[in-house]
Amino acid sequence: MADQDPSRRVRHILGISGGRDSAALAVLMHARVPQMEYFFCDTGKELKETYQFLDRLRARLGITITRLQAERGFDHWLSVYNGLLPSPRMRWCTKKLKIEPLEEFIGDDAAVSYVGIRADENRDGYISTKPNIEAVFPFREEGIDKAGVIRILEESGIGMPDYYRWRTRSGCFFCFFQRKIEWVRLSDEHPDLFALAVGYEEGHSDGRRYTWTAGETLRQLIARRAEIEREDVQRMSRASARPAPNAPLAEVLALHFDDDDVGAGCTICHV
Ligand code: SF4
Image (tube, rainbow, N blue to C red; front, side, top):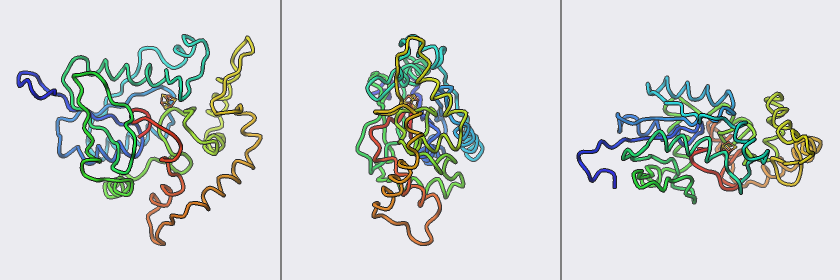
């Protein structure tokens, strides 16, 4: 492991995604590891709420968050991939816009990477296979679950990212991991971004069609908005968990927008 050669400086790094879990991890670790280097992989397709949340975090903790950005952006890589929209099976976006800039940032330095996977999660997320990077999981080691994360953010005064009102994950506005109801909410909250996402589906002069969400285009999806909203109400009423009457707003939102049941995500993108 990285610490074994005393002549080499070991870097301590923590990736901030703009989401809840990595922010809470920064709160937990910033006093314990003063030399921590915080970074944010910026795809250039983020929500403005994400930048606002990062500003809050920066101001509250007094930390610097280094912005990592690929030399060539999403639109360049989209054309390299011949217009093929990224998907859970073809996640070139994560590789090109997040993993490669991160690995360049670390280079060959020995580094300990602090990963915000919670004790109640059953997934690995992105863990570098480079031998000079060692991943550690403080939430898992300390048994910190989702309620614990929410508590950390509330007690710090940072609170939840504003987009949690309508969306469960950080990341690109067009992220294919979002639920259908979240596409509907994107069209309400950011109609300009929704229109851009529609444009990505339709922008092929040779008539090829790719879709962000399984089985339908965004135009078809939005035409079904009443049905999607109805299904979402049913999903929420099926959820047996109910917050305590005096539960903080963040806890209520976390129940309604539980991001643990919407397929695999990735720590480098979403938490
Ligand atoms: S947030 Fe979604 S669309 Fe953006 S890089 Fe990550 S997986 Fe790809």
